[in-house]
Image 1 (spheres, rainbow, N blue to C red):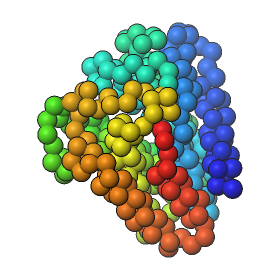
Image 2: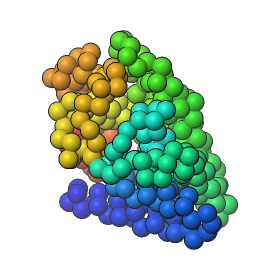
Image 3: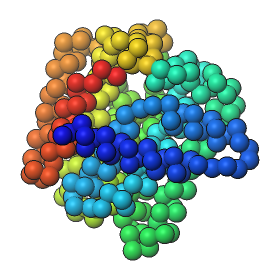
Length: 294
């Protein structure tokens, strides 16, 4: 039942993304490059979290769908830029050649820029078309913008770049991943909640839930970079070590890192108890993230 519900939400997002990116304008190459990365695969975790948190609070997920898709567009921009030679210099993403390997660095940079801006176009258009929900959409947009900027993804990426080949403390590593990974996961959950008309108490609880899940998600990524299967991961295993990146596995080892993932996830699930049976999908999704192999 959980996997069926997950597929339904993923398919909703996929269909809407195709609609948004069905653009036949010049220059064709930029839209082709944007579509290449958006439709290269992926779990659509962040948009699913957005829809699920809206649904949890009794909101209409159709109203959250444009917000969820905007998040995925912005997330994909960050992946394109993260893969660039000046950043992580990756050749593969989700089992396919990275954007700059197919279209060249210049077009890849512009494709990322295009997706970032398109994400905000989608959000602004949604607000203008639904003035009755304007304030809710604005709050959601503010969450996403903050998480995508220097207080989120960009800030985390900067510290990540400056920290290569450096032995980090737990707090320094936590800072990187709370910003680079967990911030947009947090924004996804809170944005969906805002669209549903969440109270401040709801937002506080869901924010804490999302922080824990985002942190667990990144530690799991660190584990998979050591023990994962290249074919399932869609990228080279051991790339963190090769690039001189310090990870949770470096600090705590595999066994302790796995224990941390389980503990963080269990604590996150406990926070959802206040929402009763309506939180079942989010709880199951949290456990699904622990068990993932990619």
